[in-house]
Length: 464
Image 1: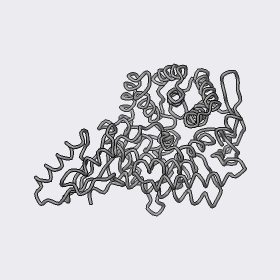
Image 2: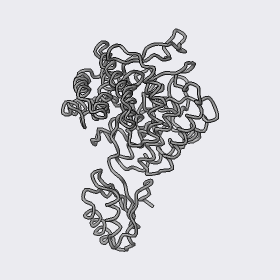
Image 3: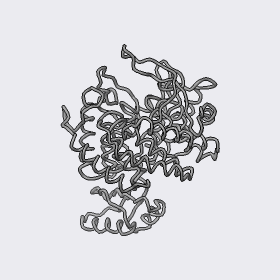
Image 4: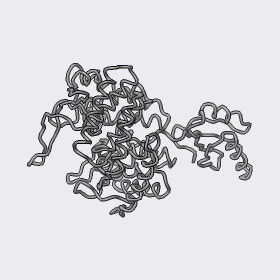
């Protein structure tokens, strides 16, 4: 539905495809003015994001016109990089075009796109942004380079540059006004909470980097945001001039929840799971409000951001009910549109074709609701789930030494597994590595004589 619309409305110039749509631009009043114009080439609002969505759709559907248009969009994005020479930011610059082009090259088995991704990776490493945040700064670039170092053609260069970037973020950290660690804002405001411009964006990038100093500072960034959390609001504030409590990807619970999901996935610390659960509750409130009010379906500050969080939480926590909630929200979105236009993230405007403000992001959320193997867009190229957690209940034993021996048998039964912790009552939390079949591991564990049961961990309860 959305993919066909984007294919139909593409404007071609040779091999390059672009789109027009409503955008909000700054005005002297400070309120912004809606204009209808051609998009740029970036991942957030331009052809790189549109091309990424169409490549994902084409890989699922086999639609050759969508694949052709994806190539055209990414050709436009690469030309935009050549013409405008943006810095290496993820959502506003070269890094996002590089990651989108690499993913499309892999999905469409396109050598020409892979060559472009190689060139764009080199440019990203040469154009490190001065800003700190995820959208325009080094946090986003770090995420992009870590992704490119896992599967890209310039993996070694990307990894080396990522290490340098991570160290620069560590060097720029400062104590929070109450507690924890924060970073100077890049939009002329105090240090912020949130994923797009705040501490969660840096925490996500340093968590993905995964080294001890990075994980420590990511934990301190979460503590900075924890100091601002309101139990009454069930949310974290937007600390800009007009303080508010938005449930958005950019500011507030949806984005912070995404960061906490990843922190929990990497570290297994229960506090992150609890905070992600708070964000899931906020997402459900947003869905209910939009079903009964004026909707915004965008990824950045609308319903698609809530759908993405529910899908990612369903995977991390192993809770199919959250995936069903995401599918219900997708159905609500389709019902709200009917035969009309898609409500996008342009206040006072009409449709926008982009990934974070418009049609491509809405289409991605709807596609992911039916095909959960599609990577998370809201997590901005953080890695896939590193491990699966399982709970093993051992039969009771009063002898601590006997308990240690039985835990050692669990390790031996599933090579590569990590025992995260064991309660005094013999309840163990294990992390199963990604190259081990989880069902086979559970079968093996359940066959051990003194194991009462072994099952997937729905949420971390091993301290019970």
